[in-house]
Length: 362
Image 1 (tube, rainbow, N blue to C red):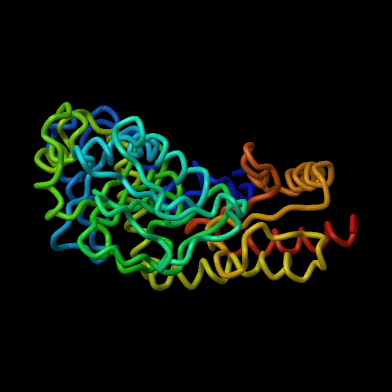
Image 2 (cartoon, rainbow, N blue to C red):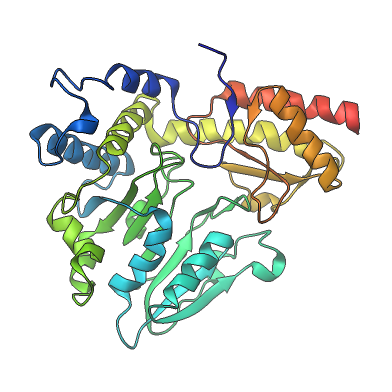
């Protein structure tokens, strides 16, 4: 095999090599079934067992085996921006949103097409440099739910403290940090995440819903848009992305083998801090974008003196085997996404490259 690149792509992102190798072995024939999983009916016994096992694995990793259901849906997290209000916004209620970055704002904007929205807190005027204090997030009096984005992929910030919402359901887009750290997941009534960060490849979206939320859901929207439909049919109401769910299954088992969320949380902090230490020690050559207390351990972001130097950094990094370090096209700058499957070796190599680049161009 040609030497693999150091993959810092923000999503689709790095997958564990051992997972890729196992999938390669089973690509043509799945578990002595005589055909590939990609050829099987989603009504077959093998696919039904795979589907249910994968749901159970996800709930186990989150400690939500009782009182919650895991769903596998299509359309990415962006579709959930619409499905959340379609299912939960009843007449006379509002969807409350804490705005901490571009995707949080998109979720709020999408909900406005469905019903009333309310901004419970926002850090937009501060350039998304921080996350509002949990105590300062105030849902509307008629809130149907409070929606937060726990980690901001583009900007590189995250929540370290969750807001208290009482009887108001707390809903979270966890696309870029689900399975990366421990949280009190029982505070959430609904969690959703596109798979392409820490769960597996792109193509399926995981939704975890608390069972007591089900009676509140709309009965007036089409069946295919209802969470209730996917609960009832165990995510097999329509044809699911079977091979992507299989890949998620392998990634979840890999996650368990690493020691689960407790172990990965520490590993991820160590990896991110390798890069933050270089940024903070650079005397301004590298400039962190996010206030230190709110820095993400999944998406490390920084700027340099000007766009020309940033473009040179990306160009040289690619020649040295690094992939995906350009910032999001909407904001520019630099970003290293260090999800669960990114090895510590890659972060050490990047830290060394950053220090060397500063010596040569500082």
